[in-house]
Amino acid sequence: MFIDATWITKVYLAGISRVYDVWNIDFIKHKAKYPAVMQALYKQFGILNLFCPFRPNGSYLLKLHEYEERIVAKMLCELTMKEGVNFMQPIKLNGKSMEKMTREFARRPPDVGTIELTYACPPEKED
Image 1 (cartoon, rainbow, N blue to C red):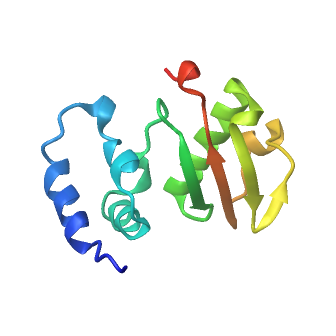
Image 2: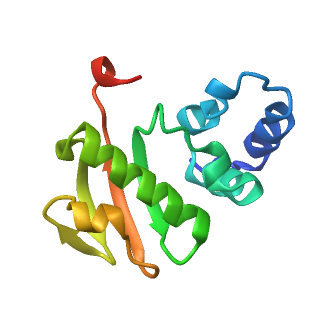
């Protein structure tokens, strides 16, 4: 079954201007179930405006040559180093698997390429 995500994107775009609770501005990331919706919203607002370091759980495919996406990758790497390296798995850099996050990589992620990862922090560790 094909679902046209255009109308869903328009609903989110109309509603985001009414959100005054900056701690929950990332509700879109947790509610949008269709990749096309997420891509359209990230394009419209930028990933940095929708990313919340207090609730980083999710899967990411970040282009490191784009400044905002590299900053999000850096924040996720720093969180991983502080919270626990097991929260970020699997990690792929330019399509090749990385065994685990390293401090050197977290300090200076590359300026080019892509990083694909899933960040999963247990609920009891959030906040």
